Length: 88
Image (tube, rainbow, N blue to C red):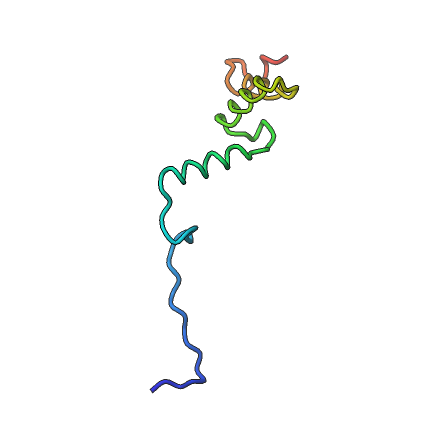
């Protein structure tokens, strides 16, 4: 016999990350979300991932943008054998 005044305990929550949608994402949807997140990465060049930095260089070349030198300097700093000393 249930008492109507006693609070009912909720079911225990599932472990792990909560679902985004009711069904799993397809590989195409997952890739689309990944590319959109990468395209909207406006962090400074020192904090950018390598792939995002190369995408920014490609965009800067195509658009003839003045910030291209910032991205190129960061690539030289990371990958040149002398590192930051190559820029002096």
